[in-house]
Length: 163
Image (cartoon, rainbow, N blue to C red):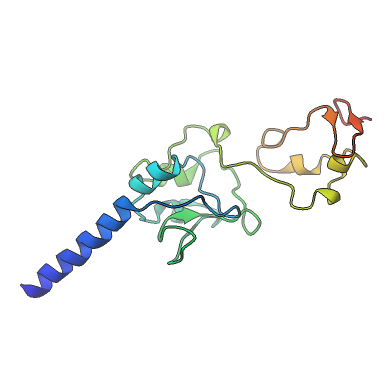
């Protein structure tokens, strides 16, 4: 009887911690899967089952291990290591039993903004050329948009990349 009470107390403590858990802002290199609710709502809804991780055909998301960076057991991925392939069928969201991941179309995914880590190496940014190679990512021509305007070095690009 004592062991049952002890197990019940531990279980209650873990559930209470998960339900009340709040994360600070995610580290810049960690991204939640497509369709994730706002972080506080996501943390309340996610039961850390790992079904979204299992459903991904590319092994992109991982479950956070015990660390101060992310709440333990929550899914994330690091785009530099294994990017999201933006699957048309969104298997990770379809596998979520609680609605922590909700997405009807992959085009509605909003997983963050990309930032140039080394802008001096981007030909379009520096004005050296219009290379367009970053647009060959998943959701071609939709995830990254080039627009006419001044580059960091002040050269003016026209539509289509001509100067």
